Length: 108
Image (tube, rainbow, N blue to C red; front, side, top):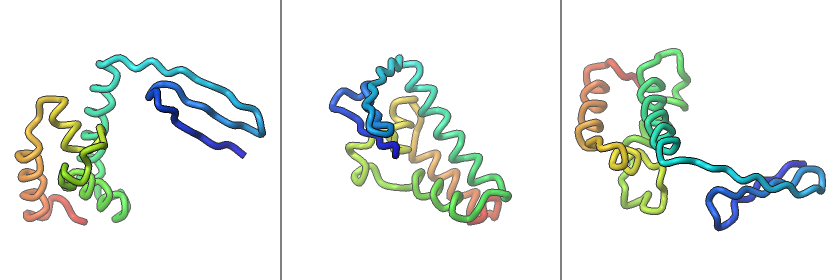
């Protein structure tokens, strides 16, 4: 059985694999984190646009983009926090995505 625990240090991870404990140190640069956040936003847009994706995937992407930051204050990877860190306007993005839904380009 594999289990995963994240310690208080955000880059140290402890894995327990069949009773053996292993520690892995991850070193993420600020650029790495920005690229991850950018990729998360692009993936959400792709999931909304691609009609081959399941409804569940589309709804999850929609909810991630539309959830209010007040509900996600401690989540550095919320859509709003990703946009803030990347210098993007989440309100404009949300408005654009809502317009695409209203015109039928995005179908949930």
